[in-house]
Image 1 (tube, helix red, strand yellow):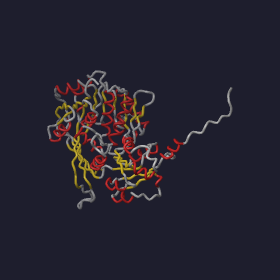
Image 2 (cartoon, helix red, strand yellow):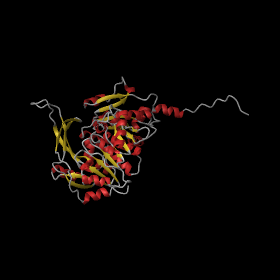
Image 3 (cartoon, one colour):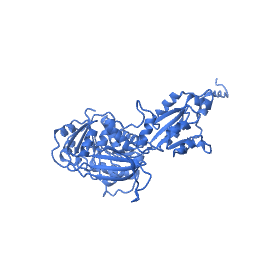
Image 4 (cartoon, helix red, strand yellow):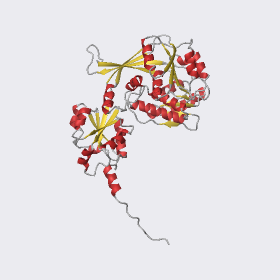
Length: 472
């Protein structure tokens, strides 16, 4: 990319007040939130810009900011990771405050009705847009994309600068030359009101995407479908569906993650299909990483969205961070010697049950006591390395006892997963898990997959071929 990724749009301050609740208020049937902690983060175009910067991009954010306390807090969070080219926001900075407990929102308070209105934007804003190698427009209906000077600057970009436009029903239509439009299902429905397109699902999304592409002369329209991925309508005979990998968690901000991923892919010269696929993958990772608020808050602090172990971190850091974000800790255990499709299926299912997955792995000595002197085939270090390379595994811990109960006493998972082959079996760790309010869940297995069977098959020499005759 020859220039920076320029993100243009409305910035909001999102604040989560996160605590625990175990009783109702005596004067009203509402929960009392205790030990509350404030977690501020940029929202709107600010989150999209942070997500792009977390990818190591050179990012410039063009927005409107007010000279109030929320505006100053936003600027301080953002300027740590990117250049901010801002012009004046008339009125108070938009703020959204959510009160959350147990991973659920109890109330939301909106304040600040500031809007960007026509007026001078200054040479810094003009220079930033002119230098763009790619542009992401993140419209939250607060006036930045309707500003005449901003629209003129965007409309004057060279044809080889890809522009991704993430629309808002209360926002403005895209400028000519946009490469990719990224509405979600609800936005696409509201943007096509009056077009006589009814229904829901893929067929309706395809019709709405094609209508928007024709109405606004846009190369590609990607209608995001949440857990179903995104549908790209690009004038081809049939639309392209980029499916999402299953992800469970707070989806707030996933649309910004999708748009940022797609813009980065186009900036690197990718096709529309490649950009939509990358956007879906980024959005799935964002949700799967844990509570979206925790991811965004970590972005504002460090510039990285990862909640999985990084250099110097371990499984206990992941567990602590997940719990701090109000997420669900899932754990499972086993030898995982010669990883096979049955293992992978179980881990995929387990990860969908919460916000992080910790795998408890039998040590080499523990495996030998269970399986005999010829096992394990792979050392504990190798087994952990393979497991942690899987996208569904957040971290692994090795235990040397005959059962994982002592480790689970410290880990205290919310959900402990075992295979369905343990149905009717008294699990020695069950009491430990339930003593800390955890639940045990049995998941289905892929029939016929086991390490023992694989080893037996590998050690059995093939039968000699049957010779019925000789050809002369």
